[in-house]
Image: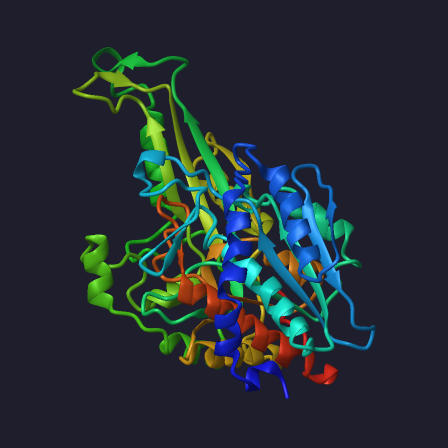
Length: 463
C-alpha cells in the first residue's frame, strides 16, 4: 500500500510551512540567465536543497551555466525516472508593475507572488518534496530517480543539446517527466506529449545601391519591397495553405486516438475570438483550431522592414528590404528539410533574393497511448480529482527531442501551475493549492511508475 492510499492531504497539511519555507529559499535567490544575475548562486542553492532532501546532487559544468544533477538509486532492476526542470527565471522588469518585490515571495489571497514561483521553481521543487515526503513516511518506492535541473531554459537552452549528448549514459532512463507551464483556462491540469519544432529564416532583397527619389527613379528602378511582397504571396494560397513544394511531405497524420483527445479539449470558439479581438481564424477553413496548432506546420511572417515607416510620408524607393519568417514544424519534419524546400521555392520565384537559415529545433512527440503515458494521465487525474486536459502536442517548441530522439525514452509533461500564473510577466504567482496539488501528483507518479512492470514501459514513436 502506498502513501497515496493514506490521508495524503493531512500529511501535506502538516508539512505546509516547512515546504513553503523551502520554496521561499529558492524564490529569494535571483537567477536571471539572460542577464547573468545570481545564476551560479542559485545552482549551488538548488544542489543544496536536493542534498538536504535526500537526493545526492552535484553541479555539472557546461559552456554556460551549470546543470544541477541529482540521483537517487534503488538498483539496476528498478525503473528509472528522469525529472527535468529549470532554475533560471525571466527578467522581472518592469519592477514598478509588481505589487510586491519579485524576489521577496509574498502570500496574498492564497497565492505565492514571486518571479519563478510557477516558472519553474515551484513546479520542479514539487518532485523533490514528494520524494522527501515519501522517504520520511518510510514509503519511498523502489525507483531510480534522476534530476536534470538546467539554468538556461529562459535563454533558449543553448548548451542543453551538448550536455545531453555528452551525458547520455548518465541520463539513461525509462521515462522523462517534467512539470512546467500553466493549467488550462478551465482550471484543469494539462498533460501533453510533445512540442512542435521550429525553423527561423530571413529573406533579403536589394534594389539600387542606395535609397532613391521616388519621383526621379520610381517606375523603372526595382523596389525590393515589391520583390519580397510578390515572393511571399507565392508561398500561400487564398485559403492560407502553404504552396511550397515539399513543405508538407513528411507531416505525420494524427492517430484516431489523438483526434479523440483533441475533440475532448474544452474550447469556446466565440469567446476565444472575442478575447483576441478577431472575427475569424486564419488558415484552411476545413482544419479546426487544434488541428492547426498541433498537427499542421505553419509558415508565418514575423517581421518585415524596408523603406520609411515613420511619421508622415517620405518619397523614397528603398535600396533594401528584409523579411523574417518562422515555421513551426510537426513530426516527422526536420528544419533542414523544410529550409531546403523553401530555398528551392525562393530560387524558382525570386532568384535575386538572399535566404538565410537562422536555426531551428526538431519537433518531437511521444504516443499518448503508451502505458506510461496513460499512467501519468491517471495519476494527475487522481491527484487533482478532475480529468486533466490531455493534449497530444503543444503548439509551442522546446528541447523535447533531446529526450525522445537522443535518449530514446518516452517524454511526458504536465502543468502544476495555475492558468493565470502570469509567467514571464509582472506579478507571477503560484496558488497554494497548485503547489500542494503538484506535490500530490508527483507522489502518485513516483509510486505508480515504480510499480509498473518493466515489460509495460514501452518506447515513444520516432519524431
